[in-house]
Length: 338
Image (cartoon, rainbow, N blue to C red; front, side, top):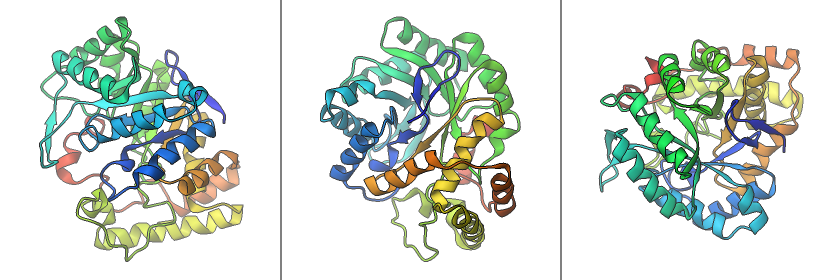
């Protein structure tokens, strides 16, 4: 597994990270045993970056990741680097209730995460969405205090715009910005990538398969559970879904010409973004099974030539996707869209 540095101040991590959210929440039922086996398989394959959040199923995901680490071979456990998001507020029914970036809340969230994960430090800590009532300088400053005390190693950001990135970086060293980035979500290229490149900050790209939409495995007639995020996502509704899956079929032809799967060519495209923008991009793959993990890891062996990239661009042009990447109420919380 190749490695990349999370910016000029961050740690060295695997070229692909594992996003663990789907093992607990938002994509329907998941198999706990298979999820833990998938984390173990990822570590065995050389994946070092594990991404979670304290609000994923109200702490369940952190406890699952903690169990996976405790039951992994010691050598593999020691190589794991934990990226944790905090700040999203939930109620007992699972509803969303805003974000809390107050310094006291930051330290409180961290204390609970350390306990659930069973570790003595968090490698990269970040607020999931900017709290509109708290200056980003205060939130980042509180994480910096956790760094000084050894509870956190590095500071990250999530779904933030260029101006917020600059303000945060002026407060403390920032390792990376976690943001949705895929063939069908390319808004990051306009202002955010140039800003992170200038400041020496990496991108950890989530949603590289757009929640399975461009994985090549999503069927037009698939029935989604009410607790599946995609049941409410604009890109998975009606005519939008039909249009987006037509894009996938165009991409499938390109993938077949390379002898790879749709998922592999989409992930390989995300891997190629770093060098093309003179920055570091680390895609997070949301595999929930060992089978999907193995497919995703195969993307690291795919080399895309200029002709391949041109064919991909023709199949899925920028801004070709139909529908916003989140429902309207959630889009309002994205500082990155401002």
